[in-house]
Image (cartoon, rainbow over all chains, first blue to last red; front, side, top):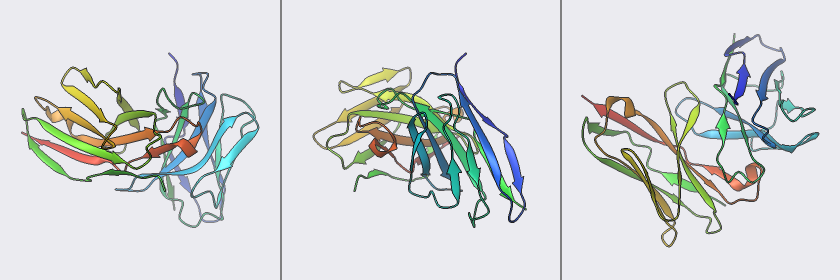
Amino acid sequence: DGGITQSPKYLFRKEGQNVTLSCEQNLNHDAMYWYRQDPGQGLRLIYYSQIVNDFQKGDIAEGYSVSREKKESFPLTVTSAQKNPTAFYLCASSHRTGNYGYTFGSGTRLTVV
Amino acid sequence: RKEVEQDPGPFNVPEGATVAFNCTYSNSASQSFFWYRQDCRKEPKLLMSVYSSGNEDGRFTAQLNRASQYISLLIRDSKLSDSATYLCVVNDGRGGADGLTFGKGTHLIIQP
């Protein structure tokens, strides 16, 4: 079955450490997205990519970086510059226009220890 | 600025009752509309797309009112398992995240 896979499900980061969250999809979707969700809050866009080797910053890109070397993969790195990284991170994908809806991964819960 | 507004709730509803909530959007160029369901500490999952003529899926009915720029979700014979947060998503078809706006969700609690 086609789907979108995020790993790991839970991740613990020490102060000053960079960590990378994985997102892989086999839906043949062109567009991929990273969102952050804090408790009781809506989704906030970090980065998105519509084609390979191209991506754009979202509303809260500071302290994060991404790459899109393959259509199927869109990893997110949370750098030490992100001062408040504890959150639920969601990856999503869609067809280019988004008119057929969005598919989300099961999320990664990141905690700073 | 594009906006999608939802009443955050919570809506506390007895089991078996009918409940409805709306979502208003500001961008008149919006092309496609969706309701997503998000359970606590889980990812959003597509509940249903919303079509211009309205559509029904079992106990769920979605309506679109372009003139007043809102979509609605009606749940009949509510079940305990319907307890979740319901997100409204509006897309203007341009592609990418620029064209996509999420509401912050309506929290629904079905009580036995």
